[in-house]
Image 1 (tube, rainbow, N blue to C red):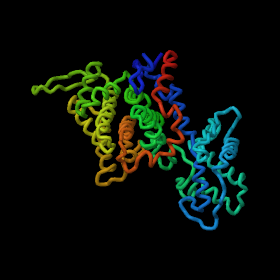
Image 2: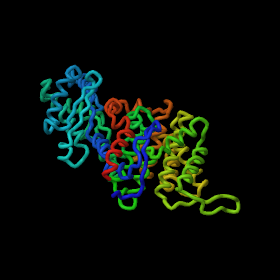
Image 3: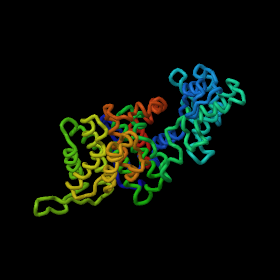
Length: 442
């Protein structure tokens, strides 16, 4: 028997139904194997910049430092096949595990998928990075017979400044996940993926970007203990409606308001849909005629509000083609929604609060970085868990190249590494198909 009474239909980014009458738990990170695989691949997939290693060694410019007299002139890129074979042999646990080493861009880079068996031998997700970095370092030293007094240059070209710094500054090995020391606390690892990375993964598809971002954010909620007990359903509803276009509400709202709509008209459409679906109803009408609404299901209302938040961003930012408007859109969408209904806005007010701080940090007096650099681990945006960052990601998917820190500038390697993986390119279809598959079991 399912844990919750909620049953949903799942739709893709074209408004096409993928699955009908799916129990809410079918899209849970605890039950849905497609989501589990997305998380697994996020941990286990590592990029190796062979062209970068070759250049670093030839110039002596390693780990952000120039070291004269220790240059190594070797053809790393031309020997990509040999290096790939050696790295696979070193990383692999058994011959039939999922270890994969793919050569990209004519040998300029490798994409390594570390097997689960190796990951399970450790505790931290950094096992994927460290195993690949060590395998590449040893392979280059052995393959090119690098002498002992220059071997440290290979290590620096691969690993960067580590362990002189806790981060891998100047490294030519890259994971989509940041180092644990950069995480705000327990469970923040998968929330520490900047919006621009997700934009690159989905090829700027705003619906798919919202889905993938929502998966990462809500998996983070499960990891940090937020989605336990009374709060689990709320997070699942947010993932279903905002991230996976449950009952086609997100697609319908955007389509209805896309040509001539505004943030205000999205609020109007969202409230009308919530009334029609019986999620909210009039509690009382004041002498002025103002209607105060209430609900018997606050988590479901929050999920509807979260859908409207993304729809408002898609309509407003889609019109401007400038992602800088996302904090203001988030703030004033929720402000209008609260005034229209008398009910709390998205994430019970936290999304609106984040909108204030984010506008200051992204492009106001402080101006520390564009919206594409934000993630759920950021000191400004971490407070709204699960439903804020998907809206930021949607905005960056719709940006027309106005950012100083564009996805092309910050996330080119990420796109090259993950861009052809269906799990990251079209998560709505992948997760929806799995939900349909396991619906009857639940």
